[in-house]
Image 1 (cartoon, helix red, strand yellow):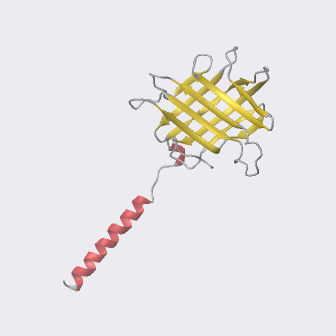
Image 2 (cartoon, one colour):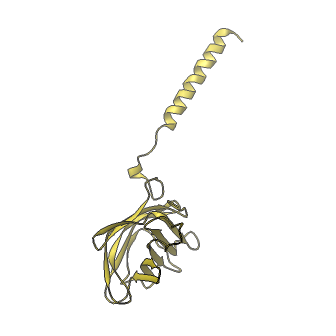
Image 3 (cartoon, rainbow, N blue to C red):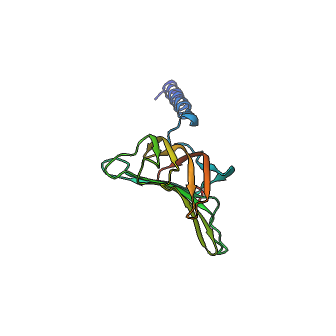
Length: 185
């Protein structure tokens, strides 16, 4: 092979390499990312005016038949699990069932959904104090903006109560979690 052919071939390879590197550096903006397609995962809300972050050990799980979402759970804790034997940090979850149906993007209200619950559990040395959705006229709303096998994103809010009737107003709730992947373990 002549020197001219070798340098021409080398020049062509360099051009192809530069083009490949240039195209691979392009990516879509995280603002346009679907659920679970961003590293900006969160699960947060205000409870009676206090901002809480449940992104510790947060997870979106779900399942169903024939590619449908018949059951979803979004859950997390306020802090990491203790290593000193003290009680677990408070946890929060939202669960929705639609057996035989399909949970898709849309608005879901506890007043209309028989199998929807929002739970806030506070662990103490003497037991667990649970606040949840009750059917006494309070309403809790879950807005799913997008849901896929990549993750889920949306908003939530409403009223949850303990068995004594004490209420917590949940406001400004939002989440973006990957599917079946533990965030901040």
